[in-house]
Length: 432
Image (cartoon, rainbow, N blue to C red):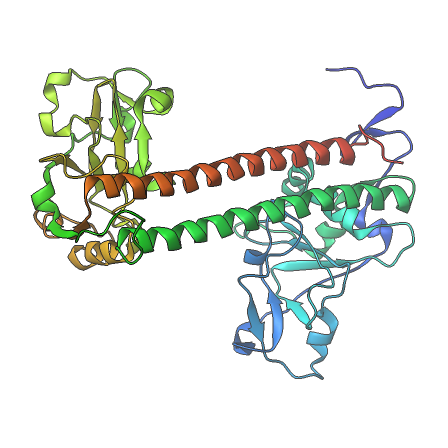
């Protein structure tokens, strides 16, 4: 056990400065309530804002206002008046996903309400900054305290009594609380701006991709007509080697599980760069068919998906060093018949709306749908010349690189904010 630094003390919420106080929320004498049942009958396409647990996030204390429901209620509804949200209210989810914290700001300009799954805590004190309390309760350590207070019965959850029993560590002055909250809020604002920029760049890339891959927009220097070909003219198709997830380990040959294609946000796998992270299957290579062994430029499609979005999921293989790589269960391997498609172009050409609609048209199944080798050959694809393909892929690849750089910056900023939150909520760093 590490020694407690001078000027600090061990408490129920961790090590904090000696001049900080640990108090139950109830000791701060807030107004604590929750929303009522029966809101569903008031759901509407207009009216007052209705905050649900799905609008709260563990990564940010400010509610997400992009996916709101609305309620149409009477102005004199006494229950609605009691639970109408105010600037500075602290929200805590008390059922289902317990302990998600939200902070209400004046950005909720319309009357806003909550249901019985969320507790409302409203402070009326010159000594307590509610935004600081929100950040403190949103910390990882506080989540452990929430779990300790949670009823472990058949319907686990918190009630208003346990909400009042939740502990919070408070700096001695409201000014210090506000300074800490402001620093973390600035970090959240930077994160939000980066998230919006990433979303904007992704949207721009999607639009550019749809224009360039359909020939709606042509690049300078290219004017010849595109051919339309069936995938059966461009590729030969084969299945993968059947192995369960339980058979995979860190030893053997690289193995591509269809679930890893579904989970990936990329449309390619660079075997050399990602070798350590690729699952391995320890079997003699001769037992896998030649069609299931993945070469540079092969495209691997999934043949099973639980939703429409996953029906056309695929990855392109980057394997210049010819590392043994086995395609797995529920995959369809496409190998080029001729060099009619640039390898980099294959990362993008199957992502247009027209191609996705064809995959959906040929997909079969109910709960689990997918495309078969006999149907995938029928899908048609507009094919420009290889030089034009390369030019298109270069533009889209540059856009991907810009997005990846922003995502790296976003991840670093989130990590910095988490470090700040820990140091500030424990008093390891004191603000003037």
